[in-house]
Image (cartoon, rainbow, N blue to C red; front, side, top):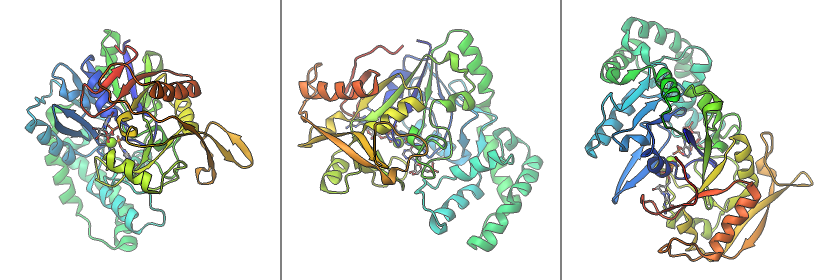
Amino acid sequence: MKSLAIVGSQWGDEGKGKITDLLGQKCDLVVRYQGGNNAGHTIIVEGKKIVLHLIPSGILHPHCLSLIGHGVVFDPEAFLTELEEVCTNHLKVTPQNLMISESASVITHYNKLLDIQRESKGQVKIGTTGKGIGPTYEDKAGRRVIKVKDLFDLELLKSKLRYNIAEKAILFNYLYQIPFPAIEQEAKRLFELGQKIKPFVGDTFSTIDKAVHSGKKILFEGAQGVLLDVDYGTYPFVTSSNTSAGGIYTGAGLPGTHLSEVLGITKAYTTRVGEGPFPTELNNPLGEKIRTIGKEFGATTGRPRRCGWLDLPLLRYAVKASNITSLALTKCDILIEVDELKICTSYEYQGKTIDCAYPGIDLHKVIPIYKDLPNFKDDFKKDCLSRELENYIKVIELALKIPIGIVAFGPERHQIIFRKDYF
Ligand code: GDP
Ligand code: IMO
Ligand code: MG
């Protein structure tokens, strides 16, 4: 296999970081292609926790080149803070093993302010991470975003910011009534940050293109999950990028034919952080129990994650929307603490039974239909799984018509079983 995409197949936090870390060690390149520091990818190495937001999880392997592609929204200040943290973990980060696309979009202070104001005063609360993701993608689509390469030209920065702030100043002054930095001040801040990141900035597109043609192994590290995709997700309760594999073609530059496989990551149950519909949510002590045992608190914001049963109509949809070819089932160890096991097999919706979601479906109005399954009590000390867990896996595989290639049962690198070869 030459190139593999890792995508979240739920609402994020499925354990992408752990799987990217493990498969990344077999690769030459690990590429982020969308999102920004709204992501929180946790990797546990010998008991030590490393949370990556913007830097690809390949950074843990010195031979691996980590790329931040042009589809990413990039906060230079957050990047430098993360770089410092990563370096305190004795990881070597140099322009030889990390490159940022000169064409990535920059998150300005204004965009972060706007995100936070909309969340606190707007009519619809999305529950964003407050990192300025949405407003920056809006600026990109509005053809006014600052690109990373613009950070190196102070005069260009000022003129772009002037254009950029012309509308936002009205919002800050009249709608939200809050102070905001002067253009000169923001331009100076961004210019100085630009000087610090300059050695890492380059042409990631051509680097990927050359790697593809010289037969290098490439791993694409998705952030968030298919259900948060701006086109495929539970709109408007989504993030503002294409989190599905489609985002690779636009955000990194790899033509579709070069992508060998798409590995979807799913928890053995479902979680969601932020607002929006969640058909199988357990709004009860069992949901709380899963949250506590599963340590289901956001890696970026610390917010409690909402928990519920595995939802096959949504997974079937994610598989189709992102062309997922196999799955990793994570956090199986959490369900051993639970004395019942249900799986949602279909929905009742508008008088019909349906077994696959679709973009226009109103998930607030579906009634989940559950199947009870024998619960599993594996101790994961042996390589083989219990009959009950094998049965759970079979039910999912049969429903989705793709194999579960990986079973994870703990946050550490060794707490995993590979049932399929990747790379
Ligand atoms: P990501 O955003 O998809 O990378 O996932 P997060 O890092 O936000 O959340 C996943 C959490 O589950 C992290 O704390 C991981 O260390 C942890 N984790 C990953 N796989 C497993 C697993 O199989 N079992 C348990 N108990 N924890 C896991
Ligand atoms: P990883 O990569 C889980 C959610 C937010 C909110 C919505 C929009 O760790 O899986 P945004 O700040 O992106 O505009 O917020 O998306 N969200 C995530 N939820 N994991 C993430 O990343 C997320 N990134 C954004 O909670 O509901
Ligand atoms: Mg996360």
